[in-house]
Length: 248
Length: 253
Image 1 (cartoon, chains in turn brown, blue):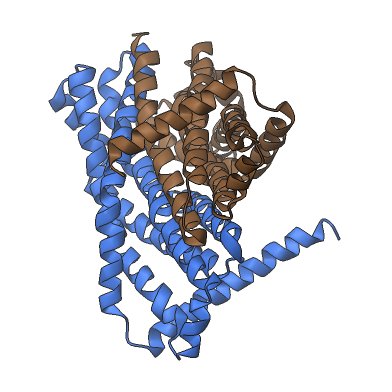
Image 2 (cartoon, each protein chain N blue to C red):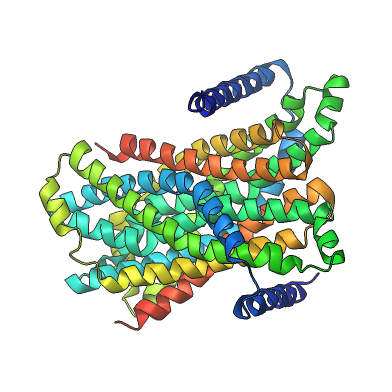
């Protein structure tokens, strides 16, 4: 399929999902089940990635601010960097790698074992049953996991600054909210919700149309991770320009 | 026992991974290295993942510049953007994002290919034919990764810098020369070399973890899916943790 045909196919699929979402043809129970599963699956990986990254940020930041004798600025800049950019992106990468690929693997094995076709034969709607709850769960899970990631990242920065490098803990906590505005936190929520929506749609689309047995599922999982990361990083640039460009 | 189960399983997996890696080293000395297959793999890993990698790197650069600009603006330090990009981008973010993308693109492919071979019993067939499966499957991939990844990382750093220069000059209207001056204060050629060195370590981790996950895949499409899944997550998590240790050793003192 050519690129445009694929984009159109994906758009049609997304439209079907959105129609079913708007007309409330989805079950809350299944959505909650998928939500808890996604949160449970992704929680540890997100923490395990954002926490060391916060530590690295503190390490590099201290080295620079040391040159200017401005170590007290570390906390405020670390919190701005982590809240605005690092935690949303890294947490979403991990959600795509863990939750998105799990979605694709599940839906893909259903598709290749013809369970989805069987659902259709029985007069049920596979998109309504299997796709919409997963997309909603992903959209909700991503911001929640981002909160966990942000907390872990700032915690990591605090740990390195105070316990490894011996900065003053009081100054760190005092400076933490110096440059962070409430709008930053809102922006992080909006961004990660959009990323979650992208991950959910891409992962379910590729799983739903997976073909060719186990090898096809493997390939679908591979392209889920790559394509969803590609799409949401591009979306990130547009969102950042739109939200922060307007302020200046 | 309910608590002990997962712990024991994790320990067993760690041990099995260690044995897997050490068997690979033994194979290296027993057989002639498979240069031709390594070159094929290097083409697949290097050339085919370059467009994705450069696209991601470019967007990382644009975001970094935007965020750095808005973070430094309240203090009147818009010029510092170059330094911010050098420090955060060249030193940390570009190598780790490149590693994450390699794990996502190449690692998942390795895991799913080897897992499919495992469930179709092709790996058993290799052993029956007296071809060492480690030598045939893992060694060329590892050689290729080690060959290609430093180059990919350096290229993606350059891609990121080009994109962030573009944003700084044409979208935010900063002075290009000033941007470059401050960039060189934040990052030097030594940092590029460190980035390439880091990527060697990341490449080894990604390749071994992905091959391991594929090699011990569970049967069926579900097994292949979950092997692919755990390959990318495990290697990304291990890479970020190792990254902290390397940064502490290199820049910490």
